[in-house]
Image (cartoon, rainbow, N blue to C red; front, side):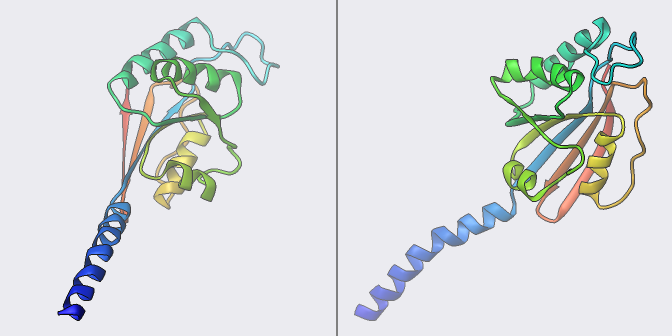
Length: 170
């Protein structure tokens, strides 16, 4: 009887850890990748321009679009145009915008910080599709046209399964 009690006690304490392991491997991570909104092109020498009037309007539209989506974290490159695109959404969600280095996409640190979350990532015409391609493990997406600021790349990771789709949001 004593050994039966011991076995049941061991099983009872092991079950919670088994169920926790099962849920952690089935966590879903969702990334929403967008390119920054329209930038001011009046000074060709300015490598860090602000958003223009249309860009500010689009940044607010992105915030409205993401209003109905639970976002856990927001990442952006450290440029005026990407930060300004991210800010209206961050303000609505009461989140800080974290910087990411476009030369070190999808780092172990980033993967760990975003696992199981819904994450908005604001980048550029080249870094956004490159980031998506790294996650997918192939070069599926080309650079975004320089005048296209309406693409949304949706990437979902659930266990070993990775899916993606591209939407145009105007």
